[in-house]
Image 1 (tube, helix red, strand yellow):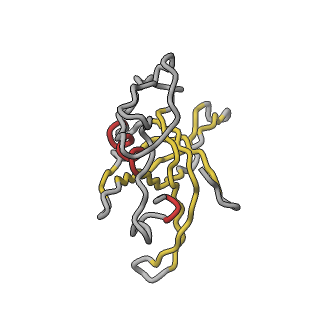
Image 2 (spheres, helix red, strand yellow; image 1 turned 135 degrees about the vertical axis):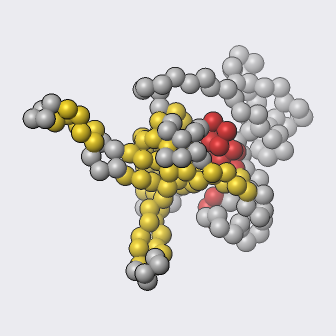
Image 3 (cartoon, rainbow, N blue to C red; image 1 turned 30 degrees about the vertical axis):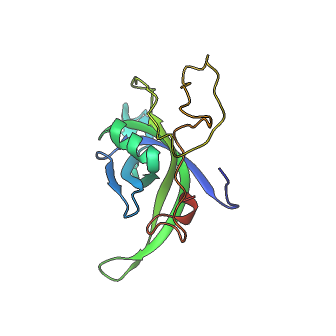
Length: 173
């Protein structure tokens, strides 16, 4: 992945506030939206109890195979570790006040294993989407290539000329 100068990368650990919402763009690109709630918990010695700080709610979006994997694997309340690029955008609310919102373009996400366990399985891929290097037969994630050109899941199809409406242009290539 090529990063832009000045790009803000972020890792957030928190809980999903609802089940991820999966949909497909007009061009057939899978998109998932979800919100992560993150709070810092500290021990208040004077009160002899744990206290949560203000909660940060971060909207997250993921695309393609990652989007489908998230929708299939995670549910409301799941403790997750999300990494991605923080971006901001402005909008005008119903009262005509200009607001700024922050969102995460998700690059990777997984369950937090601090308080839970998970059974990990390799997601099946669409062999027509990506060329890759051959894998060793001793690799537990290895697979048999179906053609003379080995392929691997996780890549995205090339976006149509001009990009995909509603999806950041750097995510469509």
